[in-house]
Length: 276
Image (cartoon, rainbow, N blue to C red; front, side, top):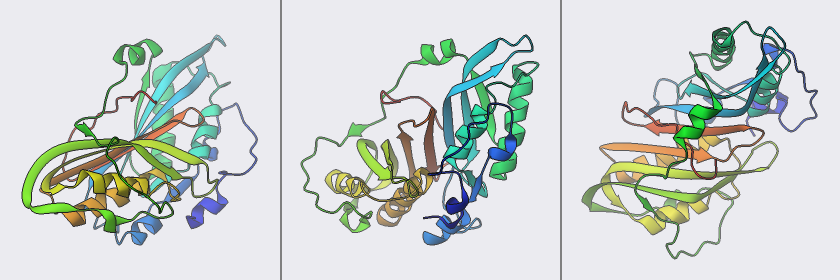
């Protein structure tokens, strides 16, 4: 377990406060998990963002009439802190009975509070239900590897030794799987996700990638660290010219978390999958 997570509200009984309380946000430093992976803030081999989508965003107009919307929050991958997910939910719930003069004031408030917790500027978009509904759902790019025939017997820890590639053949491709699952390191609740890998480098053996992803099934870690581990293991194996790894996780408590990590300064999509 991350040492800071022991002091967070995660896994503990909490009072649900329905008036604006920014102190509910609980930052967790990324440094300890980066160190586990042999990284530091100065040596990150990727750039990216964590997209958080909130489907339970509500507040009051000055008249007392409630509004509902969908919030999109983009937290830089190199921010000093992640925001513990339950504290994030409690904070958002604290808006429920709070009046705001208009949506811009709410957005400015969210940006200030979340940026202070993350330690870097956080992007905020407040979106109407009609806008998000019109976008619909998308499919991940490239080939789905889930129908490959593999044998798996170990689910406790990620097993990078399972990964295979053909170093003599350099290709560019996108592949994805919907079989990613890990567990919350505090509550042990399952975290279900889909993962996409886009790269140019040594040809990756698809069956070995699927077996490797399935080996996360009983692993306990936060969403962000799972994606960073996958990125690093593939980078070591493929020695790619470019690599992007991202996961789209199923929401819990009205929030989904979607970490993106890439060697490239790419425009990253935040489009829902069918399970989201």
